[in-house]
Image (tube, rainbow, N blue to C red; front, side, top):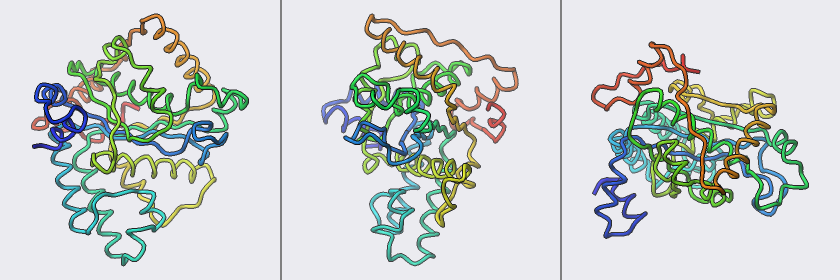
Length: 317
């Protein structure tokens, strides 16, 4: 059974041959993780970080299968079952007593897998102070509030969908988020069939990064991108285990939301909720592209055997 068939079984149970076909029929999958906790979602009015960020990677399902094999081989070689970036960055168990040579060997192997297989990275971040200014602190505990996680996750999905539409890619894309975010249930509830059809995606799901290896790559990206924003804005020192330069060699998009944009995003999300209540969803329009950029996008969504994507994708920023 392939890794994606295992995923289908975990979602639908052992007797799921028909649904396995549904999961495997999409040819691209995105895996997402977050950095930072939404204020007001864990019984606390403040976040654990100055920013909230969602980041991850997109690849063809066959590329993810090869990625998982290489990643698992690296884990096995270094005697661990899965990789968690926070524990690694803070020299916690099981990495605490490792010699530097083993530490360097592990992260180099994992970064090599990321460089080789995922096609594109995406990240979207929101400053917590800007978010608090938009929603006002006295509203932070309300259940109907639009969470910062919602905004970041939505923009990541929308950007992938817009690129796919511009490329003329017809198959639906599956988005898998790391399980456990306290804002997930309210975000999941916003997805209606009309929204899924407009974005041309399958219903987003959550899984544990322990079980779904590509989420471990998303974990690295989310953690390191968050740190890079804090370092660049003078709010953190550069840590020893910092790999942004190698991660950002992968073509991709980083969308830091300014406060003026955040107000617009927030109102858009409120409109989405209003439309959901009456059973509608605004139509997504194809983004304008030049012939050159369209060819880059077509290549981005090509089958693995004909895919030749280069750093030219950076031109799409």
